Amino acid sequence: MVPICRQMATSYNAGIPILQTLKLLGGQTSHRRAQRVFLEMHHAIKNGSGLGEAAQVQEKYLPRYFIDLLSAGETGGKLDIMLRDLADYYEDRLRMRRDILQAISYPVFILLPIAYFLGSFALMLVSRLDMSGGGGFNFGDYIQDYMFFQMRMMVFFALIFGVVVVLSRYGIFPWIWGWVATFVWPLAPITRKLALSRFFRSMALLVGAGVDLKKCIVNGAAITANPYMQRDLLQAVPGVVQGKTLVEAFSVTRSLTPLAREMLLVGEQSGELEIAMMKVSQYHHEEATHAVNRGVKVLGVVIMLTVAIMVGFFIISFYSQLYSNLLNF
Image 1 (tube, rainbow, N blue to C red):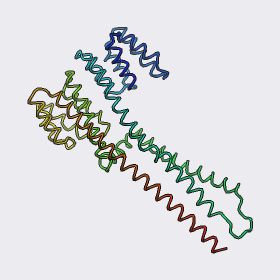
Image 2: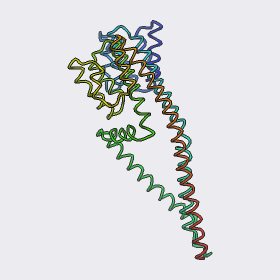
Image 3: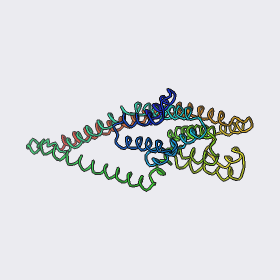
Image 4: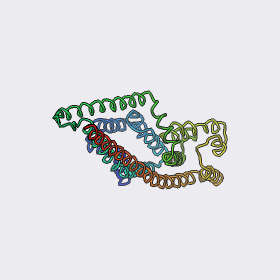
């Protein structure tokens, strides 16, 4: 989505017709499904459909947020603004995701596997050593047994992965992971601030485009990508339908921070709701960035301690078994 939105925004600002832009996007990507999506959108617009209508047909493959903002931008005459905001939004998400992966990749993908494989290899090896000198140890047989052990472990992990996939297909796993991410520290502050940042940013863009408030809340809540926060934020919809102000409608929710409620009040009273919500989004995004930095440091320390405990356990177990064999000998 990052290159797609950035190329669309750049092409639009350069005065390139949207038909030519979609054709270029379809020709530049190597993904066959993406090629078909852009070419079908190109043909739909060529046959008289609007950009939003053409994107709506591809809702199975395009994000709901992307489709709604394209439609709102086209209807409100702010397509260039929407495209730039979409590009910035997806670039911010990608940048933060890369920072998190970069911070945890070394301990997670290097230290933990090394500690596990070398530790299990050493423990199994010392348990098979024959100190009596009878020549009962065969290294080739040991390697074969060790490979069978690792194959059984791979099957075990594959079964866990399969369970996660099945739970995801039935919509259960997002609720499980959502609970951990929403209520367990240090993930909770990061998840909440990011979700609120996404929510208010989408609300600001949709409100600025003239979209109905009810639809703004529904779509903004879906952008949080958190079922618990989405359910909480959607409690404001009945109040909006009844004609209440946003401050009154969101009074029944627990996700909003005091600052967000104050800014909503200021935005409604001043008539600059879009600007107020964008400020709230920026503030929460900065808070989320700081929370990510703190959380990554804490997570790095936790992983390093876990690796240290594993290594210590393997060393103690190794020498305990070794000394036990020597004493028996």
